Length: 630
Image (cartoon, rainbow, N blue to C red; front, side):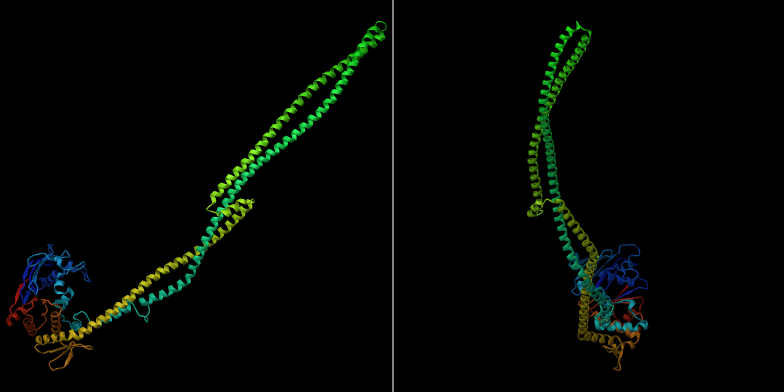
């Protein structure tokens, strides 16, 4: 692969820059703060885009490289792959996806995979190298040049990592330690305490015990529910029967009331009969008195007639005597007066008899009329009573039939007929009311028990939910534990494969590289399980890389990265070094430049520098190069 052209519209401090790169060695020269690192980031951004995530940094790369002048945040890169296919990529950094053109300037952006987070993965599809691997192998950034002796062990560890795992920031032992630590902290074991799986298992056991205790209340709830339903059905049936009895009582009371009216009629009829009897007796007595009165009246009339005759005779005698004697005359007058008086009394008596007879006749007529009225009234009452009896029976039977029909389907017919046949309904009603009251008291007691149980059952439901959550957590922990074990196995297997197959080849290449760049001073590099990376020195002895000078360690580290870069992709990717030789002496600098030129003629090499040392060394060695000044 070869980068042909860089066109920076606006990127950080860079603006309107166009750079042509050549095959072989390219030097990009610029003084400090001139934008060399910015240009390197531009290259990376064109291939992989800029992240808007801070990733524990103060600001994100996107914010950091926003154009200083506020211009269009974009650029273009032109490159060709080993198969000589040429591509142009235009990227507007505010957008996630770039526009990709082939050498015929056809937009082929959709031919590559697009990740919803990373955007278009065209460069990975072409090289199988992601950004992290690109940075850890073929690119050596300025901040990775280690000069502080205190950090020497870190750099040695990086070399060991790179040689054993292919990544300088990945240590097999550290990975295993981290996995074991994570496994213990995030999961735990059967022997550990207070770890997630121990906490979950302990709580699950507690819940099991609580559930076993509360399950008794569940059974009790079923019993209560069953008894509750039975009582409610029973109360409903009893209330229906009570209502039937009350309706029946109402009909019977209505019938009894109507019968009471009949009794009143009977009483009135009896009174009428008594009066009729009395009137008959009275009429009979009056008839007897009338006979005696007739006899008496006849006698009175006879006496009166006799007295009239005597009065007449005396009157004749008196008239005769008056003429002869005064005393006789007086006697005669008195006699006449007596006779007249007697006649008056007789007349008066006759008149009284006639008046009394008239009165008696009137009374007798009234008695007969009253008897007749009473007889007619009695007859009418008898007819009314007869009609009322028929009406009462008819209405009663109709009401009973209505009641019967109303409760068919609610109360069994046999029970309806039994209740309809009962007479002492007040007693039956009282008995039914008492039964209902007793059942309602039982129902209330059951509901109280139910209300007392409900909180416990709610707690049981909560425990069930909590147990389900814990069970999911337990299964998830077991799953994660299996995953970590699987990862550990895979890491172990990968490490073994790397150690047996890749590492020997890698260390062989590394040995050749370090021998060349150190002018044969260091010949053989090996990895030791105990000491890490060891180096064979000129006298044939092996020493730990930790005992080498910082300059030598830098050489080793660069050699490792170059060696790793040769293995990571089928594409011959450029080697990009940013101020990698700032602290190398002249001999080491010339050796590395000579090595790069001789062994990597088929690769593009891009050197970022703020000095003329690389230019002068290349000129001294007679090596051609392309120099770009920022």
